[in-house]
Length: 209
Image (cartoon, rainbow, N blue to C red; front, side, top):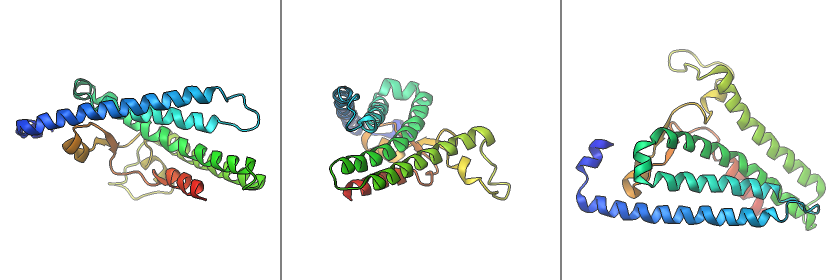
């Protein structure tokens, strides 16, 4: 990456610097907007008729998500604290992945209060969402207990899929495409983890229903 930066023409460097500043402003604005939404939701935390706790969880996840990308757009930080950015990227993926099921349960809870869905359906979706959260937490626990299995030099065993797909463990790398086009240091799992985008997909499908 250092060799790539040395060979980059000066006009490209200037354009990348402008894109970086724009990205910092955009993601910082998004972070502030979600903080404002979080403050507004705090007023309704004691509402007994309809819980907004899932929305609070989702807002917290999105605040951290946008904050991580905004910090990765700052050259002074992204060049000196890459290890910190890597761990922020790990937590970012994990937190957002765990937050989506809560939003899915909120959709059906709202539908139940509006008379569109039954209480039994809302309860079923809630249990499904909690099962998804427990499953992804179990993957991280499996990595903490077993460590990363040596799947290259040994045959795969039952349960190896759990720690190998953990987000806290395994390899994370700065996305080269995002760095080349936008100059952002955004860490992503490499290789991609199985099922990482399933919670978001289920939440979107539940909203469409």
